[in-house]
Length: 352
Ligand SMILES: Nc1ncnc2c1ncn2[C@@H]1O[C@H](COP(=O)(O)OP(=O)(O)OP(=O)(O)O)[C@@H](O)[C@H]1O
Ligand SMILES: [Mg+2]
Image (cartoon, rainbow, N blue to C red; front, side):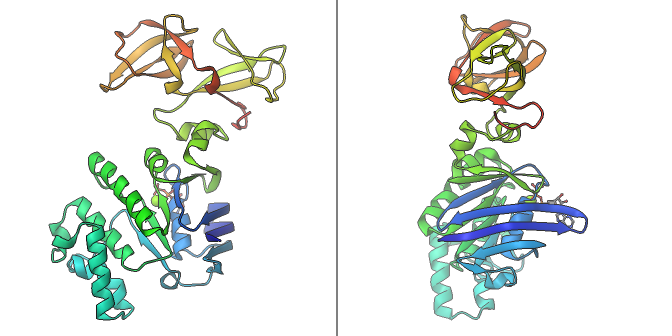
């Protein structure tokens, strides 16, 4: 059974249409990431599932029960916010047990829940501290502890790691994922960081302007983006787009003087314009390469060299895993991985 099910969900804030025809089925135990640019409706969608926003139409079900009219505290979901939202005047233990005390759970149950959550989150030594006496990562753990003690059916995370520095964020990513596996609860995780989504989730939902652009397993979105937007959003550095066309015989695609056979099954009309998507990691500096590039900027990270430049007049980024000797203004040859050429309709943006 699906743990969370949304059907034709719409949300208006006055004139503003924030969610458009959202259909989403989340199986029990799944880890789903909602991603998309700022303002696309991620928090609105999450808050609608939590019951913190009233949807305008459509249905939301949790564990088979329609919850449109069920208040947040009876939906059996727990939400972890970006801001942690800890009570400053309560110590860690009281912050974690607040919701249980509010529900008048027994002292034994509360004590056991705190012990378990504190051990799980490595907070056992900090139960007497106040939020101001904790590091950012510790505060984030307390916020998660507060969700865990309730044993909810569904965890909702709204950018919980975005206030942490890069190193801690990577560490906490692993911890949240491990926690998910240990607890086995369904998790819905909002982030605008596509790397976070790719590494943590088993299903990704890409939103744009209140609409689902594509959803699926992380690598399916990377390998087969449904449109230009998803292709540009998944992958770092971003995919390159370059103008091209189908040849007069309809059998090849051509750009910047290059020609590649169209794979079987692709239905494109002769001489049709296309937009070609080439990921930086699928281009390589090669003396026998077929695509000419002029170098503008070279960024060396140690493990890789990111080369920014132009092919014809069009901007191009390449990731090289070696340390090529290069300077601004150099002319390079690039080899193009033949199985990694994405084609899009230049008008609709849809993959073709
Ligand atoms: N209470 C509200 N009244 C009116 N408009 C709102 C309200 N809350 C959100 N919006 C609008 O709805 C849109 C979606 O907002 P939402 O907070 O869901 O975006 P988001 O994807 O979470 O963005 P971010 O990544 O910046 O957190 C935005 O354009 C926002 O301005
Ligand atoms: Mg948000």
